[in-house]
Length: 105
Image 1 (cartoon, one colour):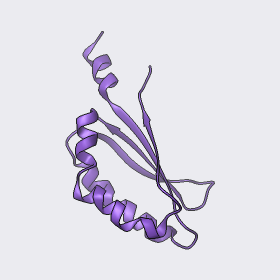
Image 2: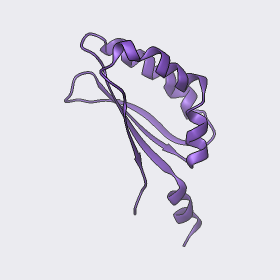
Image 3: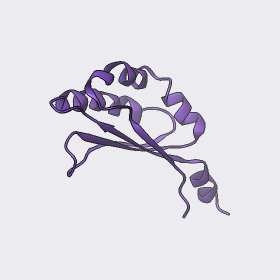
Image 4: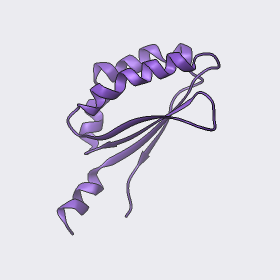
């Protein structure tokens, strides 16, 4: 097994889906965009990309990749991540749906 195989097994891929309330799409976009750059600059962040669904209005999707569980846990404690939890609730439907993925190939 190569070093790359070992490192890809410890990587955590994450998909986070947020649904804005009708009329709150721009507010949600602005709040989410503010977390992108600081997250990309974190140790252990391999990918952090924000997307807007082309088919479902107001649905935003983060696609993330973290080096390991420690990097993701550190991210979850950063001020910019915690700020999402403070600012988003009045603008979104329910809670974010989080998919934690492990690459198999």
